Image (cartoon, rainbow, N blue to C red):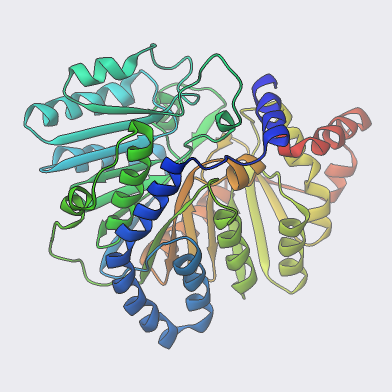
Amino acid sequence: LVFPVFGGILYLFFGQIRLSRGMKRQIKESEKRIQPLATQGAENLRKLESLNADAAMQSRYLSLNARSPLWTHTATEYLPSGEMAFESIIQALKKAERFIFLEFFIIGEGRMWETILAILVEKAKQGIDVRVMYDDFGCIGRLPSNYEKRLESMEIKCAVFNLLRPFLSASYNHRDHRKILVVDGRVGFTGGINLADEYINEYERFGHWKDNAIRLEGDAVASFTLMFLNLWSHARRVQDDNQHCDAFLSARFPSPEPDGFVQPYEDSPLDTELVGENVYLNIIGKARRYLYITTPYLIIDNEMLMALCLAAKSGLDVRIITPHIPDKWYVHAVTRANYRALVAGGVRIFEYTPGFIHSKTFVADDMYGTVGTINLDFRSLYLHFECGVWLYNCKSLLTMRDDFYATLEECKEVTITEIDAIKIHHKVAGWLLKIFSPLL
C-alpha cells in the first residue's frame, strides 16, 4: 500500500508535470512528425464518414485531440492469451531485418525474457538497430541494477524511463505503462502483457493469468513507431532530427488488404486531455446492442459509472469481467465496492474464477472496440503514459467477442444477493478504501 499512497500524495501536492523547455520542444517536434501521417489519416477519416457517422465521430476525436491518424490497409490479429502473444512476438522478432523497438512497463528475468533477449542479441550482431526501453519503477526487483549497461554491452541500445532518484519529485508518479513492440515498421504489438514469466503462466502468482495482445501488420504500425521514437528521445535526452525519424517511417511494404479501420493512440500525462477515458466513454455512448469489457481493476469515477449504468438501463447488454483472485487486495476491495451500484444499474459483472485477468478490452456491437494498456483506474486514466488501438469493422473484433464468451464460461456472475451478504467489516473496508481511490 505504501507506494501507491505515496505516489498519490505526490500527485495531490504537486499536480501535473510542469513542462520543461525540452519537453515542450519534443512535443512540438512530435506534432511536426505526425503531419505527413495525418494527411493520409484525414483521407481515411473521410472514407469512414461516408460509411458510419458514429464511428467517424470516435475516430475524429483521436485525430484532433491525440494526434492519432486513422489507418486502413492494416491486418489485425487479436491474441487472446499471453502464451499466444509470446509465440507471435517470437516469430516476428526472428524475421526482423532493419530495426526492433521494444518498450514495456515490466521486464523480468526468466524464460520469457531470456528467450526474447537471445533473439535481440543475435539481431544486434547482424547490425540491426535494436532498442529496448523499460520503466524503472516497473522493473524494481525484477532486473539487476544498471541492467541497461549489460544490454548496451550486447550492442542493444537501452533507455530506462523516469529513473528513480533519492529525492522527491512529482514526476515519479508518471510511469511508462505502455507495451509496444515494432519490427521493421511493418509489424507492431500492444496489449496487456509485459515481458515476465507470469504473463505466460510459466509460473503461478495469482492463479491462472489471463492476458492478451493485438498484432498489427501494415500502415498503422507507423503510429507505434512514432510513439516509441518520441518517448525514446525524452528518455535518452536526445533530439532525433526529423530526417532520422523519417528513416524509420519511410519503409514501404506490400500493404495488406483493408480489414476495417485501425487507429493506434497514446495517452500522456503531459497534457490535460483524458484520451484513454474518452475513448472508453465514446464506445459506451455509441454502443447499441452490447458492450463487453475486461479489466483487472474497476476503480472508476462517477461519470464512467453513470455512463455504464445508463447504457444498461437503455437496454444494452453490458457485461464486465474482473479477476476473482486479485494481484492487490486493497485495489480489489475497491473494485468490489463498486459492484453494487453497477449491478443495481443493470450492468452484469462476472469474476474470472481461475485467477487473475489482466487484459483491458472494450468490444461493442461487433463494430467498435479497443485493446491496449489502459486500466479502469485513476493511475492509468490520469497519471501514466499509456497506449491502445481503436478498431472499427475489423475481423479481430469478432475474435475479441468470441474470447469474451469463452472467458465467461470460466466466470461466476456477481449478484445483488451475494453483494448484500458480504460481511459488514469487509463493506466498511471497501468504502473507506474507495475514498482513497485516486491514490491506489
